[in-house]
Amino acid sequence: MSNPMVDIINEFNMYNDGDEWDCTMSALFDCCAIMHNNDIPIPNEWKYTASPLGVDVESNEYLLDYSLEVVEGFAHYLHMVVEILLYFGSC
Image 1 (tube, one colour):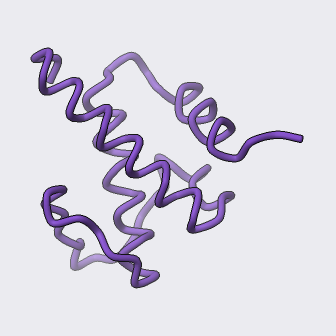
Image 2 (tube, one colour):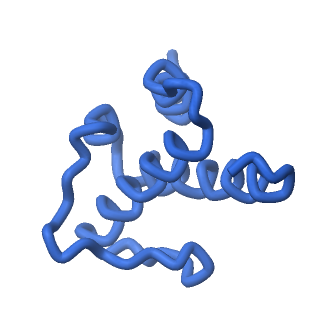
Image 3 (cartoon, rainbow, N blue to C red):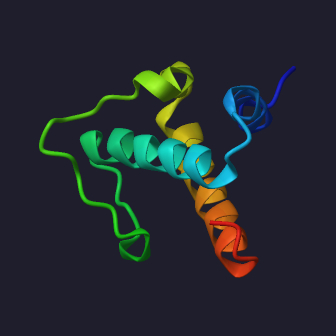
């Protein structure tokens, strides 16, 4: 039996083109858009502002294959990655 959180992280890594900052921020923004459209609270510290154009997760389509719970957990994981990248100046 597979773990959906491990699966979504592995899928993210498959689409990562080597630019850790851009790939992480893109996926985090798309997770936030999905969360916003489903009325899932987004932590203020993430400073997310919804796009007036709506959700476009074309570059991260794989997110739509997962439950909202997994997407939300993945967003928290991505935010942790952002914090690590900022700490080490990798952005």
